[in-house]
Image (tube, rainbow over all chains, first blue to last red; front, side):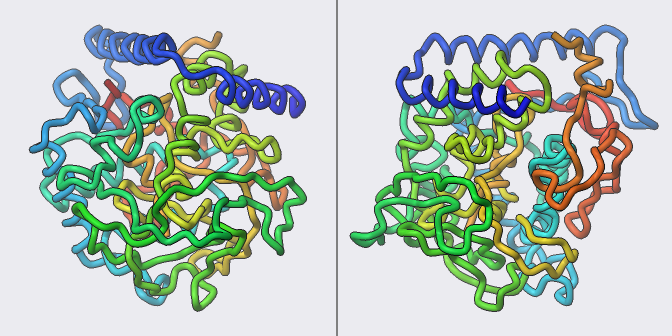
Length: 371
Length: 63
């Protein structure tokens, strides 16, 4: 089993590296999504209402998650406004548990950090993130008056058209803010996942290219955001590892939102071909979720990692573990001691956001933001 | 290929243990395991309730 996974991963890597993603694959992915959409609607139409207690799902209350680029400017602004609202509401997390949790938004980040080692590469990975994204959407709706549906980011689209120029990251008022200021020095040409001194995994490092950012986000709605928690084991270009000043990623560590958007990682790992392969060629749920998260040691950082991981979009940091702190959506690890762990920084493969069946949702991505 | 029902609710619906890459070693997770979010909120729920996007608390789809 392990061998087949590695083999599959090697196959994916070679395909994505040498075979440019084709429009055909993008169309095939869209077809599958449409089939799932139609089938679900038909199921809800036919009597078969699934219910659990008094909760019932029907066509009447069915919500539709749409790609960010398909939303109107008004819809994007409404979503951004709700996220900013959540970032201004006081946290429910007691400061004795996480002094860095200052807002309701931070409650989500802190929870993800706190549970990281039991929600990635685990049996609950997909269901945990599904529920997490749902609760985030519920908070936007119930606490901040959001009336839309949770949007998502179609990575295959930005693999073809570009991340930097995409509606989600173009830095405009209707984006989730854009790239960070350019800060890389001459020796910061690569992000080295798992390669720094202190790595205990025994696995070969993964080298990823840096972008042209690395500093604070310069424009857009989250230009002035205070990132309060983390970082956790952040791989900084050149090989250093970012850690929180106190040693505890749940402590208050306010700083700007930094990013380093790169096109290469998205194009290589999260293109339509790799998405399609994941959906059609996974032998079972184990294969599916391992490929999605990135099989350790194969060099394939995984579909979800790419876009989502901080390394891609977040700057100088390649934060694998943290991820949820950014507005893009939110959502680390340590040897558990709930609410107190010190991150023992095991350099692990990048993991990230949650996926529902195939497309990442913005929130899912939340899982990915960073430090 | 699994049927939707098998894919969501049979013993083939989930795989893996309860710890990151099974380190430290732990038992396999089950559909009865509880997912809880501390102060992010939401009632704790068993994984079984969270296997369909149109069942349990969920009612959404991607387009």
